[in-house]
Length: 451
Image (cartoon, helix red, strand yellow):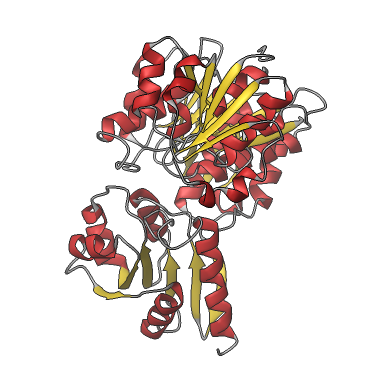
């Protein structure tokens, strides 16, 4: 992709927008960045920009949009905002940062999407391929913008990319050799008109694949299965519940492959280190993706037995007087909360709430009634959650994470679990889910110290 001398507008100054602007500027483009936030809220972002980039804050100059050769949009910015709609109507191409990265870095890609489990599965695939001797770059929604890899790669690695629905909205030619769809449950409904629009955004991961590509799909999720009906790629099913042909599945206490590249037992289920049925689903999908790329089975086995999981995803935060604390701060939607609760057999004291996403929390009623001994609610969504979950269990409110941890601990008995799995975004009280999880863990440490 040739960008030298072109006028390119980058919209949104989050992590991927900064990366895109800097790479384009380094390649000789005339770059203008624009963000609707006021300048005083963007100082740390602006400090990361390459000198010479033009900056606009507090709104968007539609003239600059209309005169651009290309517009690159950060995933947090909806493609439906009027200046972008008008620019497209005038023939200006509008793409996302993932599409830009793909054009600047052609090669072999593995893309991973779904409502939950993306980061774990992406990390597992990357670890498997590395263990099998491949050079691998991992990026995307997992933390490293794809365009940050431009100019840093010594050769041509396999790129394993985590993809959110927001990022997939902005692709045009992006084509993963292997595309993984893990699951589909309600999320981000404050951005989409409904569930069908959300599913449509996720399904874009398959849209440029051909007959020589692979679509790894969770066949235990009916919504995922429905997406596969018209795919050009070869569908590779994975299942916890039944034997599947040409895929990877569990058969009793064994993980088994029926793929042409390897047929037979991969390893016993209880040898997989990361706990929980949801993580076993992730392991099946990662194994299938690695196998279709030719990864050695011995490498896959070693990773499944050694991979400890990721921070803020059902992460142990310690034990105080017989009460276990689990940090699942990355549980930002209903599907994640359900999976986390279903993976625990002990009585649970759940800390939930935060910034809502237009979600109906009544889908949690049955599981909360069955598995949650007490519920402590925080953040902007507390009132809506209390209303939707009224009568399921004892519900209390907290004004801070410290207070929430204290209330949950006071209600717990030895052998119980205090689980932070918010079902919401974090931005009403914290910078991101990582800060939220870190504050939770810090409060657990304070309890341990008797403070």
